[in-house]
Amino acid sequence: MNLAESEWLEKYLARVEDSSSEGKAAAEFVRKNKIKIGIKRANKSVGAFWTLNRKIYLNAYHYTQESTLTESNLRAITLFVHEVRHLQQGFAVALSVYGELDAWQYEFRLYKRLSGRNLSPILEELLTLPLEYNRATLRRAQKLMRQYAGFWYLIWLLPLYPITYRNKR
Image (cartoon, rainbow, N blue to C red; front, side):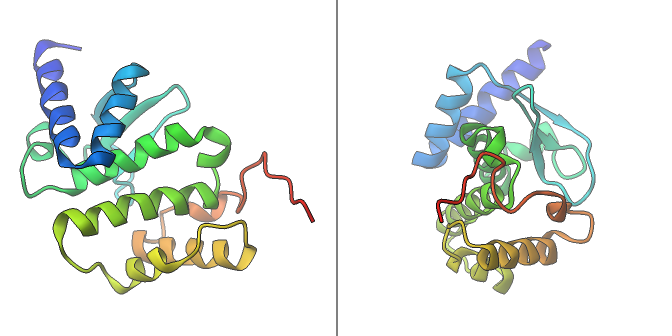
């Protein structure tokens, strides 16, 4: 990482930290666990992503170092909090519709609170879904996410439940 990258990262993490208690917890988790953060190009339907080797990237299609630091760009904060949430969940939960529902709700509740605005009807409905191991609920979440993010958002590839989930019935 060159000096400019490390300066950007410190400014970005400070901005995330100062945004909210969720942002502070996310930045602390990243620092404590030495998670690498960067900007990398990905499919247009992706805002940010995490990797199995514990890196988080904002999509260069949507973000630059400069744009992540602007006051008006709350999504650069809330997407980061979303991706950190996945690393906190662990890959078994994160790679499921259940894990995505948890992260989307965490992200968009924060976005709604920080922006003071109502969300799109799709996201407002998503926020009303209970976070539970219920097939109908998770299928509805899957459909809403796809409607919101578009055709190339590959939520349909994920299992509804974490691979470690055992139905107790």
